[in-house]
Image (spheres, helix red, strand yellow):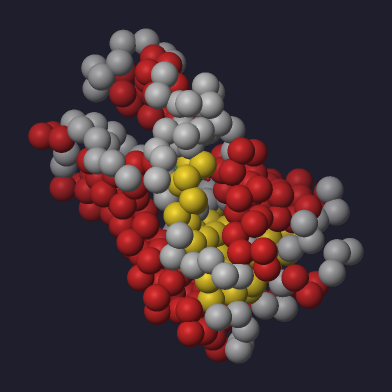
Length: 261
Ligand SMILES: NC(=O)c1ccc[n+]([C@@H]2O[C@H](COP(=O)([O-])OP(=O)(O)OC[C@H]3O[C@@H](n4cnc5c(N)ncnc54)[C@H](O)[C@@H]3O)[C@@H](O)[C@H]2O)c1
């Protein structure tokens, strides 16, 4: 059994993809992890696998846009692991639509999950940390899309720009409580989300064959390759560790050098 003094980390959208890789890495580092995901069956499988490898993990059915489910998951984290040390607000959706055809429904749903979902996660975790009189870490998943609007990713880009803004606002509000708020911004990561996006772009006529969107994007990457979820986990581990104690309000690009700032 690993030390319980590290506390728990709640990771939203951790049943697969980037969130799952983060949960696996943090569990290896001794944190108790909460797999907080809409897909609770996949979340249960992920938690079982982590426990089978000696880690501490539990799953919670969470819709990040539903405050009561997020608050319940924060409480479950405290009950299981003593306190919540960090939250990684990672759940997100991406439904590309061309600028002039972007629907109200697409906008509302994307902003609700990617924007409001992050705000709720930040608020509920921070309230628990403050009530417990503990410092803590909040890490939000942004994107290269945070930094530049794109004609086919209207709602998504706006929602990820909101994540950067929320990170800065949270950092200013919560610094006095000893809570650091930072974000990381992946480029193209090979996950189910990207596989679905590839199909969506073909259906929209933006590309004409599988993999074309990835090839086009790859040409812009100075490091010459797309990424996998493992490429981001070290940065997240750093952002929840004492090594980042004097950083807040920052968004770290993990995109192979696409955006240099
Ligand atoms: N894959 C990429 O290329 C890429 C690039 C930049 C940023 N991101 C961001 O990284 C994050 C994770 O992306 P991914 O590629 O791993 O996606 P994914 O689709 O592979 O996994 C997302 C997970 O989030 C869960 N989820 C979706 N809506 C939810 C909700 N309302 N409440 C709780 N859970 C929910 C899903 O069930 C799924 O398990 C997202 O915020 C995404 O925008 C991804």
